[in-house]
Structure formats: C-alpha cells, structure tokens
Length: 117
Image (cartoon, rainbow, N blue to C red; front, side, top):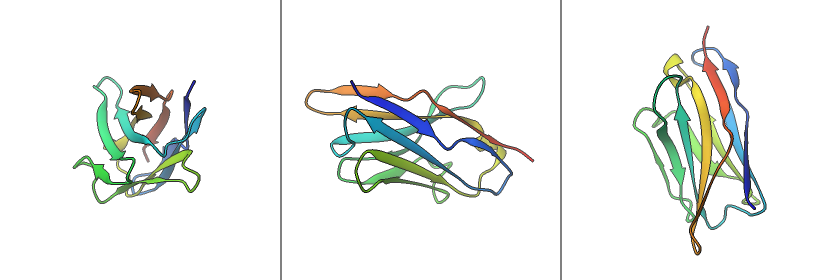
C-alpha cells in the first residue's frame, strides 16, 4: 500500500517562501506522475503543478514563475518550492501520485499553507 505524506506547510508573511514535501512509503515516484493541488477554504480544489515520470513539469498560470516542482534524488520525495507567496496562495495543499500499469491513484492528507501578515 502506497502512502503519501505532505509536510512543510505553515504560516508565512506575504512575499515569503515555503518548501512543501511529499514523501512516499511503499513505493517510489520514479514511475509516477505527481501533482500538487490546493484547496482554499470554501472553494474547489485546483491543480497547481505536475511532474511527469520523465520529469517534465507544468504549472498553473497563477503560480508560474513562483513555484517549482522537483523530485528528490532517491525518487521517494517530490517537493514544491513556493516563492513570492501572497494571500491568494492560502490553502490546504495536497500531493497526488498517479501510477501506471496498473493504474493507481493515491492522495496525501494535505498540509495547510497560510500567507498572512
């Protein structure tokens, strides 16, 4: 059974940075597409960033140029570096892993990010 655990959330002032991590147990990410989502309070979950098994990346327009998704060296960690944070980035952030052959999807429990002065 694959489990994902997010960490690194917290309270940060506008303009600050945070680094979120998504750690996998029971598997590695080397053959998975890993996506970060976020859900602001009272709003729908939205896609933030994705990294493919080939390490191609893509970002939502709202975070492009500020956030960076990357894999750790042992392929059991995917990070989301978030810079120039603003209050609109406040949300619970989730990581999700999509595996192929067989197709399986796993979600973490989420980590709260609050951007406030």
